[in-house]
Length: 193
Image (tube, rainbow, N blue to C red; front, side):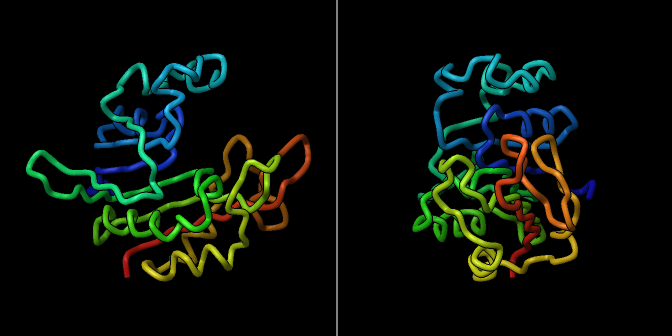
């Protein structure tokens, strides 16, 4: 969709997605809940792929990344004080780390910042992954949460969105952990109702 030019990445980590999207002409911003990268606590050898690909936004383009608790109300504004509406709001491997009771506010924040004709694209892990995930819920639970504010595009949600730590297995997206599978990943494409 060439006319869509604004992207928000929730749980941006190194900021590689917004940095990459800026380099191809999009207006992109990344929000991260932990300030480790901002404080220099994430060192280059922790994210060798991002450093090798010159995608570490916290040092290269700090104006496009910020720290924010996405489970509390927030507002991204333009210079005139208007809420910025994004064509795409994306997140990969973030929502399962959040406190379950705060997920409805996250959904409200997404709704408030998504353009009327925009897409939310979220990849969520359903496994505990060494017990660091706080919201370990099945696909039906996440569908119920998103359906309160959005329409889920079932066709787009079935797309293969695999990346380095994921594999397709039996028609499902699996997360590789220590050579085995730690449950499944879910991909949601959502639009405003």
